[in-house]
Amino acid sequence: MEKKWLIKSTSSDISGLAKGSGVSEVIAKILINRGFHKAIDIKKFMRASIEDLYDPFLMKDMEKATEIIKQAIENKKKIVVYGDYDV
Image 1 (cartoon, rainbow, N blue to C red):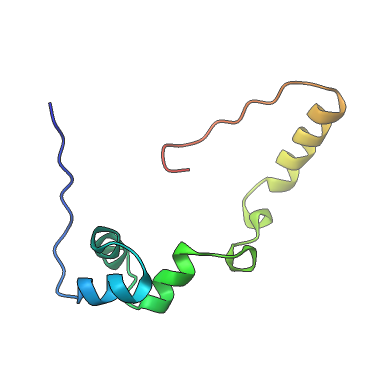
Image 2: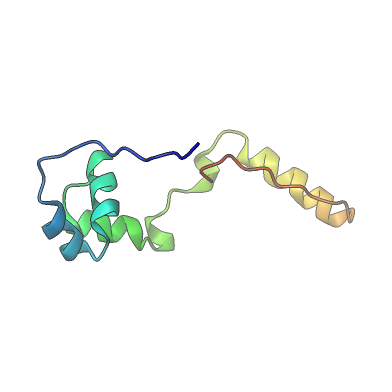
């Protein structure tokens, strides 16, 4: 069974936004639907620098997680990393 992506319609200037931000029209349309309406915001999102990222220690139990990882490294234990589909 073949699957087909359906992308919500928008009245924004997709072509102009795509050209202005350096992304394809499909990516521009997806980002518009996620709340990005300016080329500068899309550029910043697509080419984020370290300074643009959130501090990972704002996540719950990050201190605890880093301690567990440190102990595993010190004790030469194996570490398995699990991630969600969109990570």
